[in-house]
Image (cartoon, rainbow, N blue to C red; front, side, top):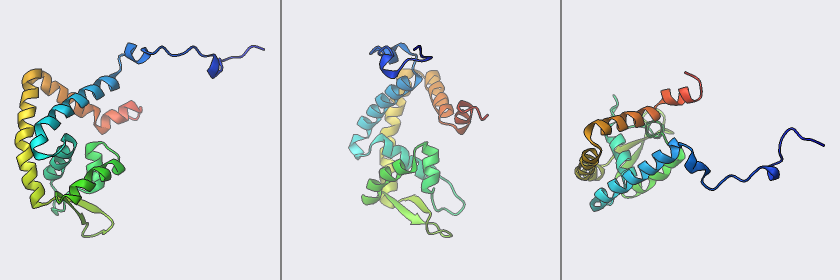
Length: 170
């Protein structure tokens, strides 16, 4: 009896290099991100911070609020485009080491705000020197125009507008 589709077992096997044949944006961006992370991690080694931690400290430091409470965990997760569970996992060692403090919101004690401690601010400022050196070297290798283009494209892909376009909700 004929069937309209092949059973899973009847499908031809996917060639091992099938993904390599695709112009896979995700694969290329993840490889590039891992390479850059390695370079920045190496540059930050004297501070014992990883590039992911430095990015988190920068977001906390750069957050401006009227009440000066620091960003909430939800706000940070949204700005970093990560799940709240991943952010919580990343913040724990920074809290443990006295670099970040979680403070209860003045109006809603269930809401937690991230604030750099004095130790955290000092470490951030120290690490910023190494970060800037790595960043300058990356820009030097890429060239200033390519570096700006790369940042702008990455920011666009991380934006809510891109996500809406991807899902056809523009």
